[in-house]
Amino acid sequence: MKIAVGSDHGGFEFKQLIVEFLKEIGQVVVDVGCFSTDSVDYPDFADKVCESVRNTTCERGILICGTGIGMSIAANRHRDIRAALCHEAYTARMSREHNNANVLCLGGRVLGPEIALDIVGTWVETEFAGGRHQRRLDKLS
Image 1 (cartoon, helix red, strand yellow):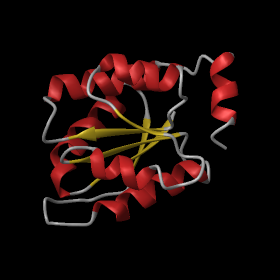
Image 2 (cartoon, rainbow, N blue to C red; image 1 turned 60 degrees about the vertical axis):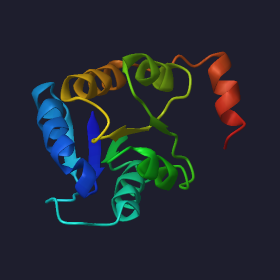
Image 3 (spheres, rainbow, N blue to C red; image 1 turned 120 degrees about the vertical axis):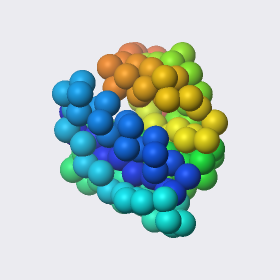
């Protein structure tokens, strides 16, 4: 799977960790930035990841900022993006199974690295269940 990954300065260190993890588990990664801890504006990177998912350059996206809240807000402004802010593996799994989330949002300053990688691994491997859940998603489009 091809996954776009982006962060602001608050999520930069986690982004680096997640990019390496994704590569280790065989995913293709498109890193859209940021590329340092210098202050940047999170909506710019949310836009890049969401555009990659919307235009099907990438199948899914991951966004990281300090809390994940700003990225979640910015991502969900885009049509056809279903961004989920997840704090543990259960919400990551449900975001995929029930909501077909195509963008995962994480807080680099509120999660530990082990939990973050558990969330990412679960989110990547979980498929959408379809069925009754599709009917609900159709109401969002």
